[in-house]
Image (cartoon, rainbow, N blue to C red; front, top):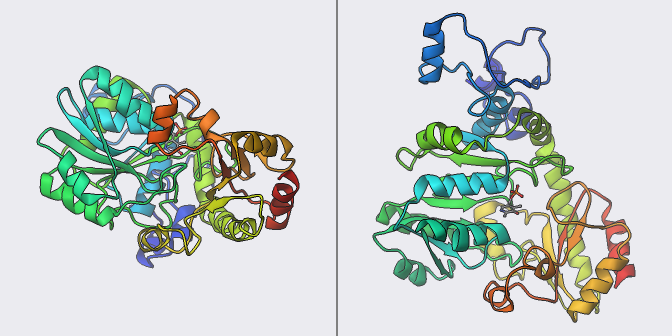
Length: 400
Ligand SMILES: *Cc1c(COP(=O)(O)O)cnc(C)c1O
């Protein structure tokens, strides 16, 4: 359905499929790139056709808050690469996460999640949703007994990040999926840290995948976006996202962002291979520098989560790592001195980025909360780009 006939029949590889997804319908001018349909609404020939589109009996778009051909094309590419039943593209990673949780939760329910989460996801689960009567049950997801104790009859999902940011902790997805299945609740995973072209969340038992497509997918940090990837194992979820959430919350991706992220998706695998190889090589070299107290990177063989990460996500370790220096002051001095590596948040841009998470992303949390989340004052997060590794190493060495 998503490919030209020969590509479909020959079961071509992901790199090929990422490029050659078929348009939903033949373009009037045979454009090779999916045009950007900058339109709010679509005209119908008859009242009957209009009624059919609005009630979901046909695939014709009616209003771009809910469906847009440029966005659908991106969704179809992701569907083809992941084997998902539904893919819903949203305005941001946070929109994907918030809408997903709003679709599965309700007053009196609770969410079992890790203490280690992306700052805004933590604030959403432990703060915003709490105001609507949804309780957070934060526990150590690497401790299966603790997860078992945390789940009760009101739990609506287990929520986790596949590699926590910035702690880089990895939980056993198959085991958590097993627990979720027994209790009849979905396992929801934020897979932003390793692209879905590298591993199959579905095979690990994830029911719903959420991704900040701002990161690896967009490449070059060109646009904000999020994806909800639904494997069809949580009854009614995909339908609720498409009918209730898109219509009532209005956080669908814009056609312009979808266009840029489609271009990003076409080069994702090529970029990721360079970036993850750069990260591994750099992590090895940084360990030789005495001024760096610790290098934390999942791709290093002696990292405590290396083996599990490899089993679940494949041989690459992604392009994010952290380094620890002596003190917060040393971290600031180092960041201020960087010449090539840019001082910015974001992950998986084409250029390398550095940030001090404790004073920025987690800057408005209390010391106690930061301690609970293991966000240390001595940690710097690095996102490794496409530059030559020699130049990155030089920049870091000269800034210490
Ligand atoms: C960036 C990020 C988000 C939020 O995504 P936005 O696109 O910035 O809204 C969520 N989860 C993780 C792991 C992230 O890195």
